[in-house]
Every structure is written in structure tokens, then in C-alpha cells.
Amino acid sequence: MSALAPDLEDASAAPAGLRPMREDDLDAVHAIEIRAYEFPWTPGIFRDCLRADYPSWVLTDAGRVIGYFLMSVAAGEAHVLNVCVAPEAHGRGHGRRLLRALLRIARGRGAERVFLEVRPSNPGAIALYHSEGFNEIGRRPRYYPARGGREDALVMAIELLAQE
Image (tube, rainbow, N blue to C red; front, side, top):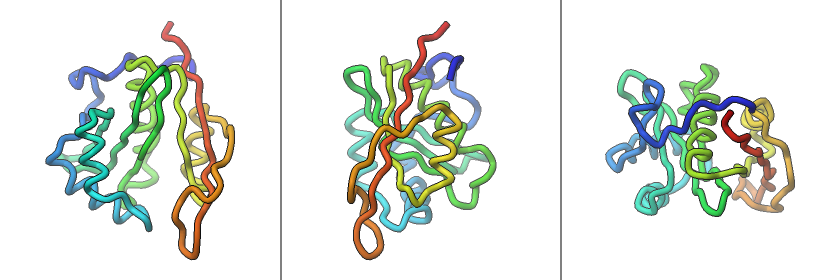
């Protein structure tokens, strides 16, 4: 990606519908999580991320949460912890919008590289990440719980370019 918009640390600079996650969003966020994933995060994991001050944002439509992301940023690197769009809102560009915002915020917090893990069984997410400039850099064997056992994770990364 060559031209990311300025960072979004100031919520007033965020595009319409995108804002920092709040504790009162957690019921809606968890409701999406359990519809989207067979092995969802618990409400406590989301709460812990907020309390740790990890960058955590929601995407809303008509006041309703339809997607979210959480990441950690330290030592010049960001690690995407969770990105999700409500299943009923798929196919409308919301995942791309969330991912682009995540990258802007990561850069605003000093990240030069962003990492993530993704299930090989999630080709839509893999295609999105490739289209935004992520490359596969490795694999974590048996990383995810899966029906009947475990599933590997593809590890992907993107180098963030300095703002021009």
C-alpha cells in the first residue's frame, strides 16, 4: 500500500461509522463473534483487550455494530488479534474498510510491520489480505481449535510504508 490516510488515533478523524470500541459495545461485538466463528472469543477476552488499551474499533451502520478489530502494537510491530464482520454484512466492503483503518492506526502508533494469523479454511480473508498487500511468511502448526482437532494458521505480514 503506498498511500494510507493519516492515522485515526483521534476518533474525530475517523470515517463515518468507525469509532473506538467501548465497554458497552461488548454485547454486540460478542454476538457477532458467536455468529461468525465456530470457536469464538469469550466476552472476557474482549474486555481484557479494552482494559489493556489495545487499539479496538467498531464499524457501525445505522447505529448498529456490524464489525470490529482489535490489535496490539509494540516495538514497531502490530499484531492483528481479531477482525470480524457480521455474517449478514459480508460482501459489502466492510472487511476492507476495517483492515485499512487498522493499518492507518497501526502506523499512527509507530508500527512499521503488521502481522496476522488466518485459517487456511478462510479463503475470503486470505484474498482480502493479499489484495491489501499482505504476504504469507509462515505457518503455525495446529494453531486454531477446529472440529475434530486443530487447524494450522497462515502467518501473513505487511510492511507499512512511511507517509509521503
